[in-house]
Image (cartoon, rainbow, N blue to C red; front, side):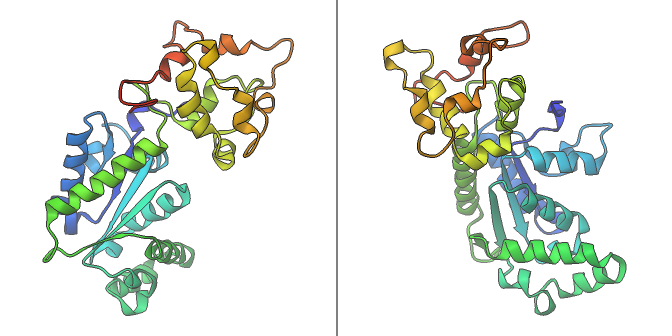
Length: 283
């Protein structure tokens, strides 16, 4: 079953509101929206639809977002919400950009000697050991990732925000299956095919590292003359299974051409992958 579209997002900004909500976090949010008006960016409670449970929306937003940003500030670890979100973000395995705002990366892995010491002393007095251990592990993992340092008294806010927004948009274009106005994620692409025709899951396709290239590069040519179309079987010879293994058709299954026909519920699949003037696939 498809997730509720009201809860789908492109970018998730994890932050401690008392530190950076009215400064760095809001600037990144507003600049992303100004660059790409169609982007859905999750910043905080204002993105939660009325009638939805906070925890459910946050978890779904993290799972659906293509890029995550975590702003580690001096009071970040005081928030159990921030730490829970960070744990979910790292387990999602999606692109993740750490921002170290007035915090050194080593402080995230040496809790007992850094600025998060007092926060964790309080957490450990009221939270289960397993939870605080997960939080510490998540912080430690984040500390070893290539991040972006930011000093509020030294760095220029606008230059920094422009840089991080550029990185986010680049990652979205690299990892997105969005063409024209129809958003198509890996999970949606896999679910759109009948299970008996396309049994491979989206996660398996990501592991094979072929689905992204297959859809974004080769389907973009599907509307051209036959002579211009690539031999699709060549796409899978080096890094993945044969095309016949992905589309296990039998006498009772539909023809490949039938899977790309227009129906009453939406546009033809081939229309979703048409190029624009600027390149083979655009967002």
